[in-house]
Image (tube, rainbow, N blue to C red; front, side, top):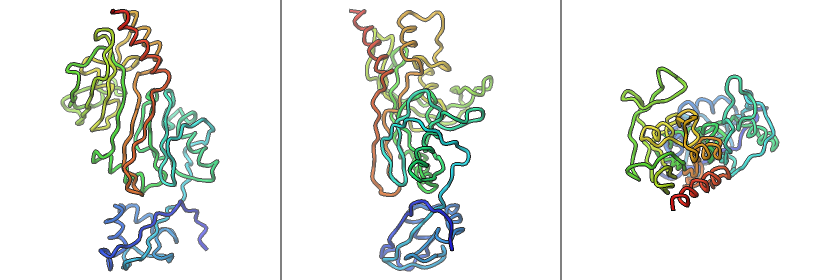
Length: 322
């Protein structure tokens, strides 16, 4: 008797065009299943079945056959469940999309095992009788708010990672910056790598990894003292937006690492930094193709209260100018 606990199955009906093909060929052709995942599926009795019976990847299938993949349910042994409020934008058996507040780390790190988004998500799943490994599709910095997606199984994570690699996942951010970009709209194509003098920081360097950010200026405040900028990414380097905006002379307001704020700040900037309380960056939209349904989906997060307060303060600079 098979005592293995499985996640929800992924099912596929064999089409006439695939009649007579091997199971592995159909799965790679129709679902893009990796060799690594196929090897994993073969290890359990019900991991790979055709019409309800255990199958091997070399078995031939006929049109109308139903192939089912069942992955072992995974306990997140390295993440402690911890109850916390979660803002869930979407959840189905394969994908979870959240609106992350600023001030929360996404995943536990050495010396930081609790109070992360992962702790809250694992608790949420366990409360509903589910066990999944926490697999974020992408990361957001602790002090960046907004949309983040989490895959519930290895297959969905693999497929979304492939979409990311091919530039098929769209991410749009809103940032409030010092100064106003010139030109107002443009592309920053500047390689990024670690700063040899401070490895926790990133810098623009000719020997860095290709990094491309597109930006559009949404509003300019106080005669060019600050601006609201919409940004989309072609690449996803660590701290990319923060580094690129500093590179063009428009660092994010209240960015402790790259903002260059200090005692000599003008009064309006000191007030803006205090109002924001964290780097003024928000992941406003995430667009992806659902690996199971093929549906193109867009998830959006409205500006949080702290950035709305900052925007009101920056708009007031225009009143002082008039």
